[in-house]
Length: 569
Ligand code: F6R
Image (cartoon, rainbow, N blue to C red; front, top):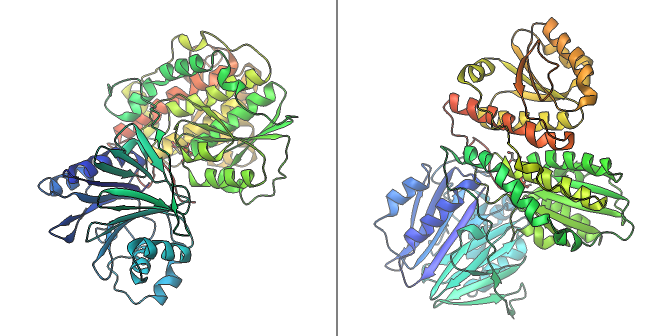
């Protein structure tokens, strides 16, 4: 999703900001641009052709004051005019904005301004410009009238900069006489950084930085250390997604090592009388949460997973004996954050299970349990999912007072390379279904999400037992059913389901470690403890999606309409 970068310093900041935007590319975007000062005038360069093109368009430019943005369209289509930065009606201010201004229509009606885009951001900018006083006063006064979320940088033509935030992250770092601003710590330079809290602002004037609260009072801020979460392998494979799938084994081992002496678990403050666990997340992290809930139940703790976007508006009875775990790779997902804030407002016990050390979710929750998947760049989550499942499994063992495994993840992982024929065959079907029971049903959901998000094939997952309650009507010669079976107790039942599919002309492919499916095409898995099998079986499913994506000629790292960090609700 949208990304912000800024530079103020004695050197040329154009290349530095474009480089920062390049780092933010992984979050997903559809247009980008920069604003800079040249001869006391604000200049804009924008493109819908990507950050590399922005580099070509700006490599001969130079400025000490530069702000940049990668946009993920919400209000108004993908176009240069809707790309940020925007320029105010008076042409004196430029702005980049992450977030959404909910009352932009109402504000627009009140303002007398010219508009060059269809965005809500431009309305916020003109509201700022309409206020009187110095730039800081204008920004703070305008922010009181907007409803919604924002992280903004305002650059005035005389080189003054004001930034502020509400619910959307924004960070600054100071390296010698250079100041860097970014919405993601990864795009900051230096070792230390400042964070803005909600409704806090910063002013940069004459290369000096000062911080303010919403009452315009000066506040003091301490710097924090940037914690690194490095990936393990250099980019060895063709795409980030492939690289990251291959990193799975390393990151599981790293996680095990970090959890080994249990110190990381013993720091977690559990409810005094722990009776149940609620896991709350979105997308792939929700699937990991479903798996986690099964692991907790396995050791006798009542547990349930919720979609964050539903949890907020549902009727859940919050309870002081419940531990609320928020699972998120990025730690920035708006729905998950909103749910965490809701639980926190009831003073209940929260835990962030995230892969991003300095994330917003970590700051909101009382406890943090890190996953050690390293930086995940591909939009489709792979190694981070396996790590979330693994972390929840290890945490369940800890809660049950059981010993953590030592070498389990050390054996061979089934990095199955489907042969080209098999990929082509599956890709030729009009309908793709994933089925499974119990833990395998959860893997089926994740497999289906991976396939649809990078190949655009219309597919879905269904619990094997539910097929006969409606979906069997869709099974014919145009359908392929991928059945996952890693749990001994469901083998026989699955065999009957498969016969029903075969009888209706559907193609069946079984993904299993068992030898019982000789009558069907089979993807053979290595054999591990059954509770560990969901991590083993998801890997060939991730590969399947990747290989079909490549066969179709799409870029798996940048699927359409999706972003790595979903910072809008
Ligand atoms: C799918 C995918 C998304 C994310 C979801 C939550 O591959 O990546 O479904 O899992 O947007 O993101 P995080 O884990 O960052 O909260």
